Image (cartoon, rainbow, N blue to C red; front, side, top):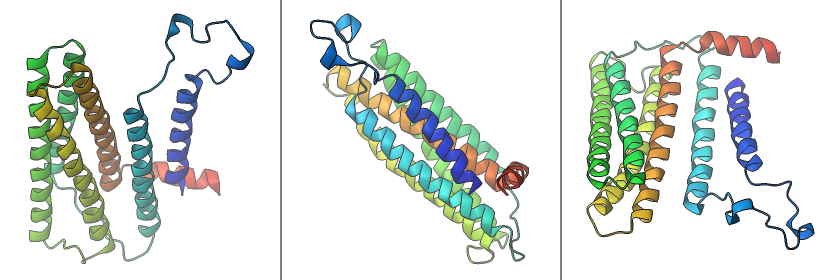
Length: 233
C-alpha cells in the first residue's frame, strides 16, 4: 500500500499544479468588460493531451497496484528472487535513447525542421523495437536457466510486469508509426506537431515506468518500502 500512497501523492501534486494553471480563482461572471485572460489567450490544454494524461494516470495506477502486490507477496517464505539479467541494463539505455529521440522530434517539429523530425521519429521507433527484442532475449535467457513462469511467484511477477510494459510499448509503436507516416505526408504542421508531442509524452511516461520497474526488480526499493511501512504502522 505504500507504493499506492506515494503514487497517489504524485498524481495529486501533478493535478494540483495543473489546476493552479487554469485560473480557478478567477470570477469571470464578476468581471464584465474586463479581459479575464490577459493577452486574450486562455491557458488551456489541448483535449488530446488532457485525454492522454488521464489515460497515463490510469496506467500508472495499474502498475502501482502491481508493485504493491509485488511487495506484499515477496514477504512470504516461498519467494525466491530472480537474478537480474545483464541485458536489462542495455535495454534500459536503449529505451532512454528512444525517449531522447522523441524529445528531439518535439523540439525539431516546433521549429518546423521536418527532416530532423522524421529522422528522430524513425530513430525512436527503431530503438523501441530493439528494446522489445532485448526484453524477449532476457525472457529466453531466464527460461533457459530454469527460471520459468510458473517456477516461483517472483518469476511470475517478473514476466507479468515486463510483459505488461512491453504491451504498452507495442501500443505506443502503433501510434508512433501513424505519426511517422504523417511526417512524410501532406498534413498540417500543427496536427503533426501535436501527434509528435503526444508520442513523446507517452514515451517519457513509459521510460519512467520502466525505471521504476527496474528498481523494483533489482530490489533497490526494498529499504525504502521498509521505511514507509514503519512510518505507516
